Length: 513
Image 1 (cartoon, rainbow, N blue to C red):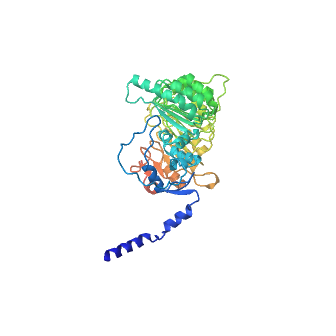
Image 2 (cartoon, one colour):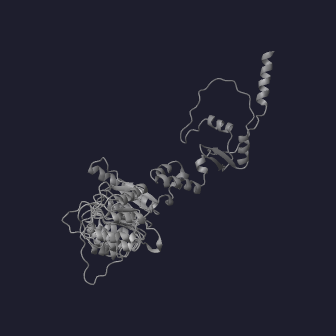
Image 3 (cartoon, rainbow, N blue to C red):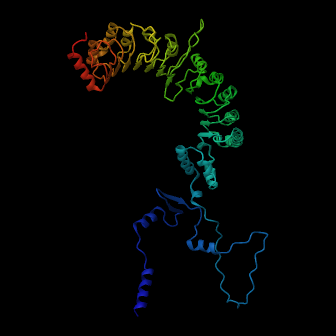
């Protein structure tokens, strides 16, 4: 009798209602039964999805899977083998149930606007390709969301040429071009940033498609591309009226093509990246001819609002009689013409570059031995913070200026933070007068000088001690190879403690004979 009693206890335990947990209570609060919503949990979120129609129960889904499949139209169903069985008793007909279609997935229940926003977050992180192409194959709703032109703002197109012979690469580019003929008008109508990488033979057709289908293009980058013609760039400049940035680094582009493009779109150009070559002179001549008044970035390397032309062997043509100089670069804040060898940058060239740059903050002329203090004094910038005039590796046969350094410090003593005069030939008296400008600043405030390089100059101990005493913020001082200083002090000092130690040694050590 023990066994039947235990079975009855188990049946009662199964029949007893299960106590509701806190999780069940929250689920009923978020999506109560009959409200038309259901919950879908995932790893990091909880989706509340609307139900377009009555959902089927688990028993109904099981019954649907067990029902035999209907034969396709036009094919007779296979007849079962005849067997002798007694006629079963007639059973009551089942109640008619409404016809229900297949249960739609949760992806079809997400509103299109929300799905586009989700895709936009993924596109912003990883780009539109290959995600949007793969998402369009999931279902019709995802295909509709992935087809929104708003998601195709930034696109990078790389030619399938790497690792293939030349003939195979040309065929692959033509095949990809055929796909772009459909993609451009259907997906790229709102394209803003386009990058072409390693296109060798089909650059002109691609740029033609861009000009016809992408009127909102603002940035174009051609990296490792060949066959970029002047006609293609001019056509693109006329078709894309919002294009203001062009990156041609590491691409084979003739200087005449760049000049023609700047003559057409120069009035709105803001950023231009080039790879330095022997053809850069013609492009710089066009820029000096006031074809790009709004240009903020011109550089062989990426850096914001600067003009960097390192090791430039540039000999620009002089202006003709009666030819007024162009507007220059009004937004320029940094100019770097540093060179490790002697170059031909003179006061005239520097004046043509900076005559319209009043906001210049950094001027790097290291190696430019033809620049004199008189030419720097005529520059329009009044708040220069960094001035580098060091001569490194230049020839000893050059005749260096021995006077004029006070013109520099008297003009910018209130704003200069870094000053580099290493290797200059200024005399002892001239340097003493130049550095004396930091002793009395306007308004009685301390000078802003924090870095001073006097390597290889004729500066005296008294001049150095007076500069350290008047500039409490001086953190770097280079006194290497200074002939007039005592031994043991001809080195570079970094940090406030080392600079103050140098001052103490200069005040206590005997003067050199």
